[in-house]
Image 1 (spheres, helix red, strand yellow):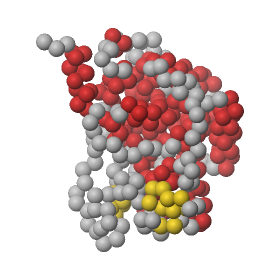
Image 2 (cartoon, one colour; image 1 turned 90 degrees about the vertical axis):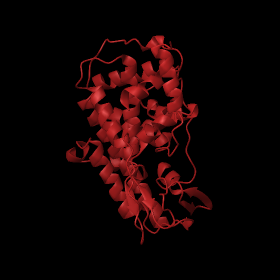
Image 3 (cartoon, one colour; image 1 turned 180 degrees about the horizontal axis):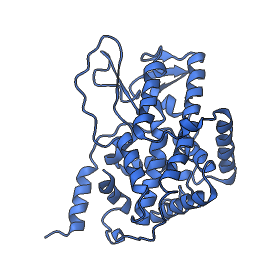
Image 4 (tube, one colour; image 1 turned 45 degrees about the vertical axis):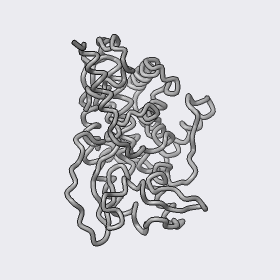
Length: 318
């Protein structure tokens, strides 16, 4: 008779065949959200965040995520291991209909960025979970709060040309500066066609530059106390969906050459959403980790060696 651990391995092997969909902000955008959050929490909480990030980094080991800010990219790093089962955690499938088209009834996936944010938040309020579960939940929460502020993670466009949807802009291509990219990538890249990819772990110069950029965004895009207090997934997703309906697809068709006015507005909105995501993440961390007693629980999952331990968390949160 197979042991529980063996059955778990089989279950996970089958689960990892779920189809792939989209990425979030590129790593730079996610690190900016996390860095803005770090700059907006008190030192006691910041110390906790770094402790959990170090634990996650050492557990792999995952040397590319030695700090809280850099751990924001870890959920996308996992795609290198073909971990498709968690792909639906990064987006939600609101439908934006364009033109004279009536879509068929669409069923939203059970686990999406809205439900995951709310679930991870509830997890991080607890004091009785193992350190690994806490560090896993923290990294994914940081990442998902970034994702939900990227408009194209809250909608898919449907039309006669795209009766099954455009996968959050991944199937719509635009041109700018003699370069052709898909619309989702353009927004992920903070409205540019050439990706800024920093090598992780960050060297001191890149780390300093990232902090400087985060402070610049904070100065450029302050938020009211009321805006910062919004931390529920449903409301944050609704904001992004509204931007999809009013701005993201404005004047956009497949192979559209982007105007300077579109690029300027896109950049402004993307930067503002990153800043707002950082403020809200800080508040959410205050409500969860900041409010929860620190746990000394270590758990018993370390003995299961058939797969890396982070895969076990899939079953915990789904």
